[in-house]
Length: 88
Image (cartoon, rainbow, N blue to C red; front, side, top):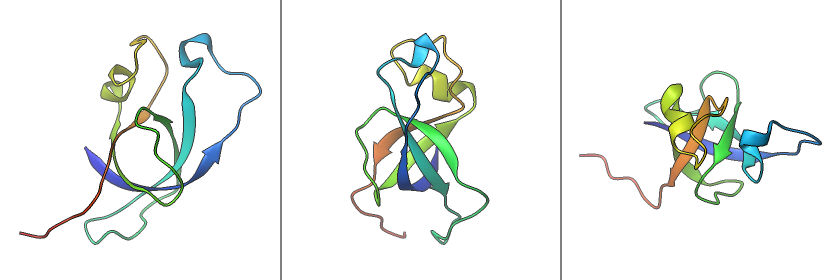
């Protein structure tokens, strides 16, 4: 799993039927110091995250498995909202 921050939502006029009813979010991946790295990505929302939330997300084939319909083209899915972090 990876850490990211939700920066907005994505609105689609049409999307594949396997993503019907799934909200799409704009997610900024973060590095180990919680700073943005790379370009933002679009992720499927499985936990009702909102703008500004710090989240856990999964990429690749595992992202598709986070949705009810496993046969979908998702490449990133939000799987948790982080309440707090502690460095050990």
